[in-house]
Image (tube, rainbow, N blue to C red; front, side, top):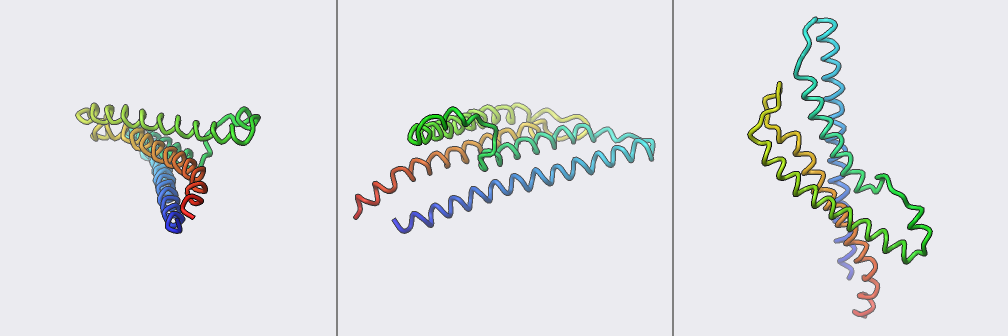
Length: 174
């Protein structure tokens, strides 16, 4: 059982690292988005030549910012939720409802992943206008987000179940 603490720490470290990568990539995409709009304003009003690719790149970057941020929000448990109903019940019922919420969220992430994979495959032969890259680059972040939501919420649910049963299993080994 002593090894379970190091496994738990490794899982926590890995999940935190994945969330941090999501936040870093979303932040980088935001910097690129702001920079390209700066170029748009400069090109339009100073050079009198409007760069037409900026709008398509902005739409692409917004997808990455939104979906990567949403996945990190699920990991950090900072997404919008109504908690007063589950808190009105006792601790035991609240724990079950929290676990149920994690399981439902993991299921949603799995469905999102599978549906988004179909979109990525479908759009691979279509090009984004002005950028000349596959349309799938716009739907790829939803697949990544679905996979991460499934991973983050599923892992959290699994750890909640483990934390509930670990003390009983430890007593059985003594």
